[in-house]
Length: 238
Image (tube, rainbow, N blue to C red; front, top):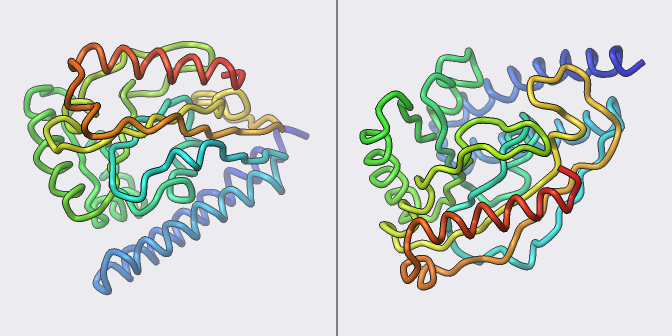
């Protein structure tokens, strides 16, 4: 039964993603807000599919930690689930993602048109410069910036290598940082076809103000973020 339900979800997910990607692309000439509306509807629709077809419920904790202004979100990366859920979790934002995703038909094209920051991971120095330049520009425009500091997905109960790009951007742009933990990898495993019934909890941790970000050494702040995000992730069962 899990296989059938997961297969149905995957089929519906692909159809919904193509449909809403086309809507994002077609509405882009009307402005960012018009495209963002479709992205958010897509995210909520996928959450509904997860609940109905896979028995996966979504819980959001720590909303009180969210600032009323744009900041850098540094999130745990375990599966595709947090990527799909992000538009329903965070105000209008831009991603920092690997550039190769732009080549995915429809979905990648929509990402590119939405101004996603696509970096070439083979050139770390150039990637950092791009993150600082483009990320600062987006933050100044009032858009949040979402980055997965591990760079790639880490299986549940494991920790990837935390990279300093998000911290560097926040310090250079005089922005705050909002950490986020979750347990998505438990019900939707890394590269997993089967989606297991259960609850995904997305937890926002206490906001770190721009003043505090700028006053702490880069590696110390990165170490603190890793410790806090991983501790909260394990507490959630991930």
